[in-house]
Length: 388
Image (cartoon, rainbow, N blue to C red; front, side, top):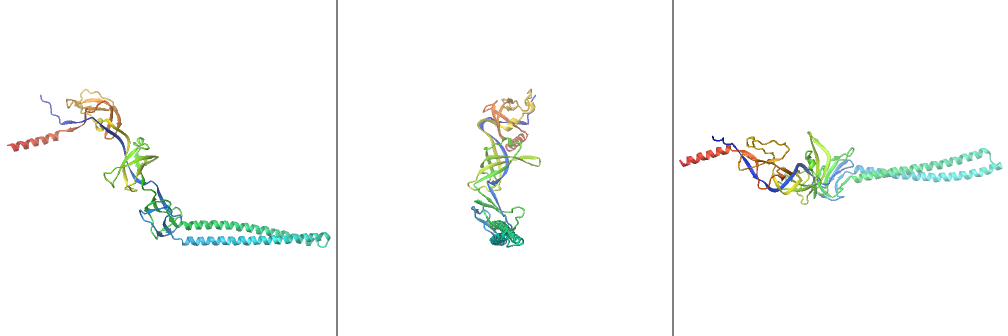
């Protein structure tokens, strides 16, 4: 009796030593480390724009100008109000001097009349008339003092309005708050900006493009492996085949949910001294969450592989959580099961702490031999035909 030929074979690979890396993959965007949005705090028409995209700027440099005609008129009006209030104060102070002089005269007159009234030379009615005149002069002095206080308050109010008008006039000149590079320009000469409810943005300045950051979205299933300071490798579509280095700086605790998928924002520090990376580029990120050099390792597929049931008769079932691999023996179709102890688990390779040794032939998968046999038959037929 001849056994039925098998239509499959097992593929083996020798256990070796090497590096095992555990990675978390994500995608994100490159951003400038400090992006400043420059806006307008006053309304008006843009008359001049002095910078363009990618223009380097220094702190205090003029970027644009808003038509200052209306603002200058307001400053002149405020100055006139200050001058008017100062004139009112001078008038009130003159009234005070006049009222004090008049009150002094009335007081002296009253004293003379009172002295004469004791001697009977002036009637009581005449003395009362003098007393009323003295009281009226004193009331006039108090009124003049109140007018002077009001004039001083008007001066303070007018000066405050003048300061506000001068500040708005100075804000018609848009200057750079910090040194950097203009990465976005949102206005052109002739554009009208309105700063009534919110400050309109005119420019965006990247303060320092030699250092950048990647804002990567990491799935909630992987975020537990990410720690600050871990090394990161990433690529961008602009430079295929080139890998850039980064470091995990921060893990944002605020979750983002999109279509029932929860993710967390991870901030990565990037050195960009050569200036190749630009804001807005898409980064394909690999965060290295674990690394073991020169360890016994096996392909991750070997832990998931199971030979056919006919090739492992009498084998007792183990819990699905027990890690096992299969070693090739002298009989190709009678592999040996080994229980192993796992170490670091990467996507491609898994560290083996105990259970197998370097050099063992590990079964990693099976493959069909039907197509291979068909090709061999065709080759044999071709050889026979050529020989005949």
